[in-house]
Structure formats: structure tokens, C-alpha cells
Image (cartoon, rainbow, N blue to C red):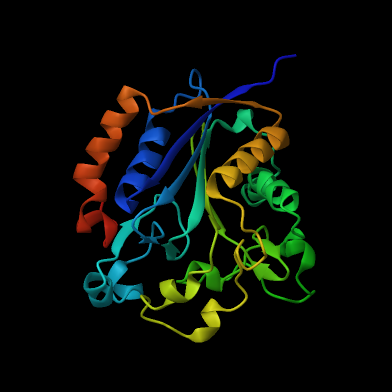
Length: 270
């Protein structure tokens, strides 16, 4: 039997606002009945801060410092806390629920949709595991934090006891969207410096590929990640680019939404 086909779209490093516009354009363009599911790989250049969908920029960020350092702030369509994006490999997934293995709950769907990350880290020789499986009994998981890496969810991935990367998901009728980061270097202290609450403890217990001894080039890491995804889900990846319609929609979303403080700082949609 032929393996299901997914589109593999590697857009390379892009500014934060354009990255988020492309992610939403892929989601809005997806037809559960007709579209091929998508795995997108990308990076961030220059570095940027992303807010979770329900955060207020002025409440959690030192916006004056962001402006002084010319660090852009964008808003994701997914929830969670602030992430500083620099020196990382980022992925996004767009699919229908039936195009991925079944999950028993929304929470369990994180396990299903991050299994390829475990396989990727293990292929790199790292002892990766879910927080739920290695956290001492009695430890509270799932507390909300303004800074993404200060908190731990059940299916956050740990390497050597340190949280590596973060993942966020959004579901709509007939649609699943997830994106997440794989840090090449630990830039959490940089990110924390733009928060209003800079409590040092928020940057503890976090790691990166570099700190784990992984020095492979970005191209090699992207290939390994794509291979891990294909193997985990039993699919064939077809290298593709954004369609003309997706490009037009991303351009429109960039202009009227992701380039505006109204959306990025306040969360008011266009």
C-alpha cells in the first residue's frame, strides 16, 4: 500500500511577522476534504519575540526595551507564553484529524503530534523523554506561565532533565494546526531580558541542542527532522513550495494583521 503524501515546505529563515502570516495562510488555505497535509520547516531572521494568542504585550513584555533593541514582537494564533526565537529550527503542521494517528483527548494529541520530535532527538543520540514520564511524582505540571520556558506541560520534551523547545496547538472544525521550536542554542536568557518579570528562576531547567553536544549543520538537522516525521507517521514527504494562493494570502495577512500593533500587542484581529 502506498504511503500517504504530505507536502514538505521549507521556507527557510524569515522575519517573525511573515512567519506567522505564512503559518496562518497555510491553515486558512487547507481544505480537509481535498488538500495534502503540510509539514513546514522554517527559521527566524532577525530574532523576534512571539506572544501567545491571549497575552497582552504591554502586560508581559518590556516594550521600551524591545523597541530600543529593535526586536520585533509578533502574536501567534496558538496559546501559551512568550518565546524568544533565535538560533532555532521551527516546524508547523497543518492537517485533518484523520490524517494523523488517533488521540484519546486534546492533551493526548500533543503526545501523538510530538512523537516525531522524540524520534529526532533520539536519532541525535539524546536521551529524550516526556516530562510526564520522568518528572518526580508529586511535581505539578501544566501551570500557566507568561514566559513559555518557565512552565512544563505533561508532554513537553526533556533532555537530561532540561526542557528543550516548546510546542503549541490549535484545533478548528476538521483542522489541526501545531507549531514548535527546536533550539540550536540556548537563548532563553536573552528572551527573559525582554520580560517585565525577569525572575532568574524562569530561565532555569532549559536546554538546547548545542548544550547537548549537537553541532550538526542546519541542513542536516532539517533532513533528520523530516525523516523522523516521515518514519513516525508512515508518510511520504513531497518537497513543495507555497502555492500562488497561499503566497497571496500570506501577503494580505502580513499587511493587515501581522504588521500591526493592533494584532501583535493587543490581540485584536483585523
